[in-house]
Amino acid sequence: MSAISDFCNTIRSWLNLGPEVYADPLVTSWVRMAEEYLSENLRVKHMLQIDSSSIIDNRVLLPSDLQELDSIRFAGSKPLIYKPRGYFYAKDYSNTDRYTIIGNYLVLDGVDEVNGTPVEISYYQSIPPLEEGPNWLLQYYSRLYVVCTLWHASMYAIEDDRGESWGAATKDFVSDMNTRHQVGKAAGSALISKRRSFG
Image 1 (spheres, rainbow, N blue to C red):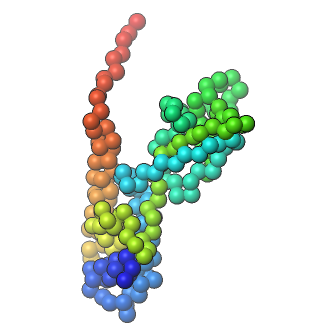
Image 2 (cartoon, one colour):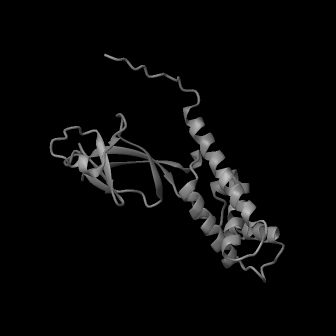
Image 3 (cartoon, rainbow, N blue to C red):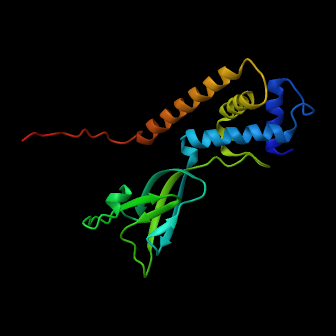
């Protein structure tokens, strides 16, 4: 049996109803809604992806599964700095360590249009859909997956008094996990306070 079929059975067992009432396609639609919600709101280490490419044009399509950029740099160099479009295209702006975003495009300065420039990005990717095999969300955060799916089921199809508590639990889990991820990113680093001087 596939991972998605097993998961559909898990959701139905929480509702104490069988596939003759809630068939796999309907339960799967709740799973997809949960995946979409969590892709947009969850930020944990398992979502981070690193891609690199040699870029010739000063613009390139961002990955189709991108939810949020984490960092961008020319390979082997320091991170580039984001600039709003108006500043990026200002003619008197000479800094080439910058980028901007236009729709689904990443636009860069300082690209070698003859030999290409290697660029590396890290980003938070969408949660891969649960299909034949398990995804990382089911492997590492199954309680969140179950509760979020049940919450979406309660919003769109089922009537269950637990719907409100499922929604609250989902939001609490997401908030706690995001906080732990942010704290974990800095763990082990030396903390340096910035000193300000006057005059």
